[in-house]
Image (cartoon, rainbow, N blue to C red; front, side, top):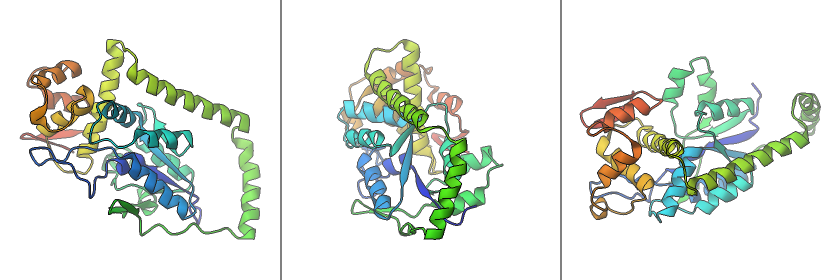
Length: 300
C-alpha cells in the first residue's frame, strides 16, 4: 500500500442523517429521521480547507427521499439545492440502486483514499470477508462530531505537500497509468452521462409513473429509511419505522397526532404489504438480515 493517502471518500448518508444537537422527536420521544445537506457541505469544506480532494457517495434512494421530504416541506429536510450543487461540482456521486456500500469502499481502496463514516461495516464484513478489513479500518476516520452545528474531525491532518522527488515519481507513474485509463474525451462523456442520469432521476420523481415504477421508487426509499434507522445496531420499534416511512412516502409532516385519519391503511396500500404483516414484509424485502424481537427490529 502507498505510504500516503491521496484523497477522501465520504459516506454521505452517514453525514446527512447525523442530527447531533438538532434532534427532532415525535410524540413518543423517538427520533425523527432527518436529511441535512448543510452538514455534508460543511464536512466537505472542512476536508478541502485541509488540502484534501473529496468525493461523497450517496444512494439514489436517499436522494429520492430528500426530494419527497422537500416536496412536503418537511421540518426534517434541509436545503436540497446544496445536494444539487455538490453533484454539479462533481463532489457528490449518486450510487445506482443495484450498488451496495461495498461499491464506494472498493473505490476508496482503489484510489488510496481515507474514508469518513461512523459505520462499522458489520454487514460488509460478513458479506465480503475477502476484503482487507484491517486496512479498511485503518483508513477509516470515525471521530467526527458536530459541535454547535460545526463539523470537526480531530484525526484528519492537513494534506502533506509532495516533495520534488515525489512529484517526479508521480508524474512517471501517471504516464504509465494513462495508458490504462480512459481518454479525456471518454471521461467527459462519462461525466455528461452521469449528469443526464441525475437529471432524469429528478424528473422521474415528479412525473407520472407506472405502478411498477412507483413500487421500485418506493422500495428504494423503504431501504433507505430502514438502513438509516437500523445501521447503528440498536433495535427499533416497528411502529417507529412505520411512521418514518409515512413521512416521505405519503408526504406527511409534523406530529403524528395531526396526520390525516387512515394514513396507516394508505401506507399499506401504497407499499403493498398485507394487513398485520408489516414486520415480515420489511424482513423479506431487506437485503440485510433483520431479526425481530417482540415489536422491535434490528440487523443481525
